[in-house]
Image (spheres, one colour):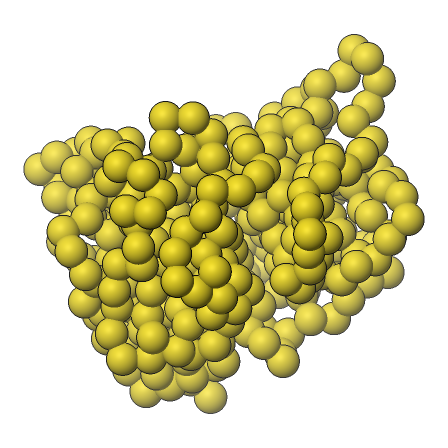
Length: 346
């Protein structure tokens, strides 16, 4: 059982509706500004990294953020000292072991960095090999000598870490990526899917709809070679498709109100029971929801709740070997003040 170290900063958790999954507030912490957690990496219940950003309140969340990281060791939360003087936010993170944890910063100034933790300290992992001004949007960690980074250096680009340096590789225009293994990697752009088989990236066909329909992809989840999902919207309606190892098939997202057109689907994760969970954001300024699809195809909706506050979620992650899902996000206090937050669904 985790020791709850909840810094409430004046917030009170609200009980969820009857028969809904229970989200617990694991960590709410103010760094003193406009704060948010954007990535969570659980290696086990007692080894969890969370990453995000903090921005001075005086700046009204206007673009001078700095990346932040915290670690849960099963007893306490501790702040991590990141190398260098980087600005921006940590857009994504991943790990293949406790001694190979990565965080990728993103910045409009072209000062992105790939940061690596070797079990003792954080270092800047050879960013100069990417060129003078890389802007990283995503990373995918599959081993000590197998890391992908996606972003741009003036033009859309991807890089591969071989354990010593970064090499420029395909594909381009990657929005999100997910992998079954080092030889089974999937990535999406705004309207296409690409697959890496261990040797080369190839465009993968998927059900894009009829001529008058526009599909925009916003999420992808690769659970197994015969279990891959893409998410997005088609003509402002929620869209999902599933790959069974042979072909793609569209999947109806049958949900009760208020999850209706113009919502946006984002990060997705397996639920450890043969189903999936995916973040859904509304078109208005209200809280994120988590859509869950069971192994039998039943959809349901849940959400972390804090009394009177808007909660935005940015990342989901399954604790290995469990059915426990953690979420990273923010609890909005005002237009210029927010609190970083981590929740768990058990």
